[in-house]
Length: 454
Image 1: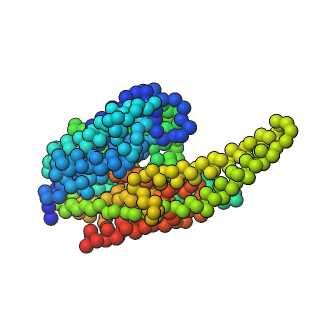
Image 2: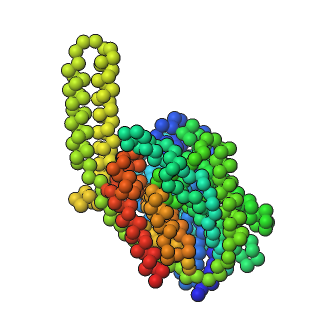
Image 3: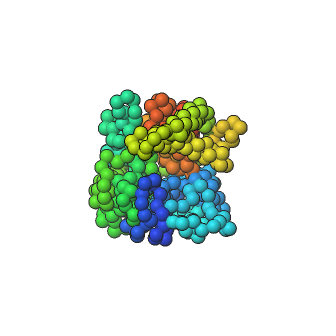
């Protein structure tokens, strides 16, 4: 077996204040300041011959073109293969607005609530965190552990008449374990920590107008402070979001709530790693797996929606006499029909404009990244995987511990289970990929893990 090396770094993203913010469609107002700094945190691990790099970036999401830009910059500067680099958004909903899917062209016109120069500089900032982490490589001993943590709660609540509401469903599946990895020097001081857990970064709600990492930021602060208190040396910590497609925090509110929950996770991870066995050797491997996912067939739904909109328009046009409740009722009916049609048309327009989509075959092209470090596995998923699928990946028998990294190297939106599609609900309604795609992604990852273990 090969001895291991680790290096880590953090680079602040420094978005200008006053930008629009992503994460909530009904948020009112632009950013009013900084509560805690957004950054790119990275760890590079090496077995002397092979390397893998994992970055956690405090943004809502990162599309494939920006992720590829980052990976190409790192590969050119360090020699780390692009296929061995995982660029993961932490999915905080208190981050600035930017074009997730492309860096603005030089001739792009200014846009209200955005800073195009900052967006153009973003890939280089993210890449620099990985490059510096690679420069900081030193001999390391790893420890990995799982710890009990229960912030996440299932958020698809079935109401009467089989309607799914986005609300806490405490009887639904969720993940009760944070996965943690620590890299240490021979003297026991920590180089870096990595934490992985599925739960949307939405403890802070739409009334928050301050940049923040939300609860994962406090988890990172806690584990770093705990290490510094015990050894005097402050490490870098990385948070990697998990299969959080249908998981929200069970406690929501203000910064006090976010801090309480985040610090509880950071402490749980630190204590678990403190008692975990050491890993001094291990072989590193990684592979990028191309995916072609079928799009949802919206033709039947569009036909019904167009018919409904046409009929409510006729009813509105036929109204005679007065401007009372009957007219208001007809206007409401038509507004609902138009909204339903518009939502479906938006999905189709996204497909038509998306360079990843082949409209002839109605397939969306993306990729996942699978990396292994000895008996540990990392599965990078390009979107918001439902927790049931994440739990299946974590339960694979081929590796002692599996980290499921969501929002990794791309964003294709929600990845529901097959069983969720007939139920509908927000995640299914806005998903672009067809039923069964989530199971196909999970099965492909499991096949890769089987092959890499062999």
